[in-house]
Length: 308
Image (tube, rainbow, N blue to C red; front, side):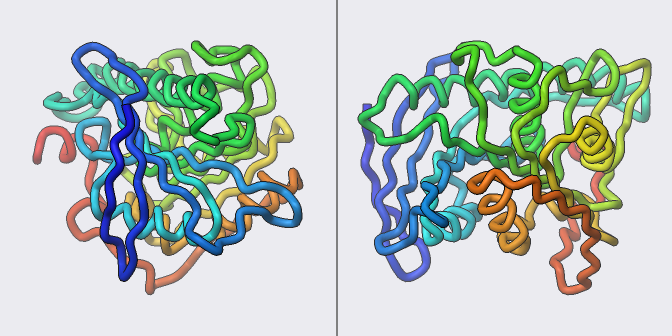
C-alpha cells in the first residue's frame, strides 16, 4: 500500500513515498523513499549513484525512520542526486534494563546480539521487497546501507552476514555496494568478527573516546562489541576496501555527524563505491568546532538503558 505525503523541509517541499515492506511479530514495518531533488546529478563520472538505505540510531530502544532531525541528512543526499530509503526496524532493547558493571553487560550481550540480528533481518526484508517491486525503480544491485549508532551496528552486521554467507532471504550472490557507519561496531557471541570473504567497501567514522559503542572492543568470554578501530585493523589485514576517520576528543557524538562529515562520506561514495577504487584512508580528525553532545556523548551503556 502506498501512502503519499508532502513534508516541509527547509524552504521547499518534496514528495515522500511510504510503503509497508513487512509484518513481523506485532510490528508493521514501513520505509519512506526520498527521490533525488529536481535538477540534481544522479550520476558520477558516468556511473549511476547508489540508493542509500538509512538505518536510524537510538540504541535499539528508540528512534524512528521519519524523525525530524534526520531531514537535513536526507536533503543533503537527495540534493546530491541520491535516492534514500529510510526504514523501520524492530527495537529489540525497548524497555530493557541492563544492570550494573561488567556483570550487567555480560548478561545483556545476548539481548544486544538478538537486537542486532533482528535489524539485519529487517534490512534484508526491505531489500527483498525492493527487489520484488521493480516498479519502485530501485536497483538492488546498487545499494549502500548507512546508519548511526545502533543503525551503524546493523549496517556493519549486514555486510558481515553477507560476507559470511548468511544473507537470509536474499539471493546467494547478492552483494551490497557499500556500508557507511557512524559510531558503529559488530556484536558477536563467538569471539572477534572474522570475514569468510571480502566484504563490500566500508566507511568507518568513530569517536576515539566512545564508551557507548566501543571504539576498539568491549568483550568478555568471547561475547561483546568490536568497534571501528578493531574492524579497521581486521579489514586492512584481509585486504578489504575501507576507510576510517577517527575523531579525536569525541565520544558517541560522532553518531550525529552525518552532516558534519558529509564531504568525507561523499569521497567514499564516489571513489570506493561508484568507481570501485581501493581508496583507503586512515585519518584522525582533530576539529574543536565539531559539536558536542553534552547529554549523550559520554554516556555509557548502563546510563543509556538504566537511566543512571
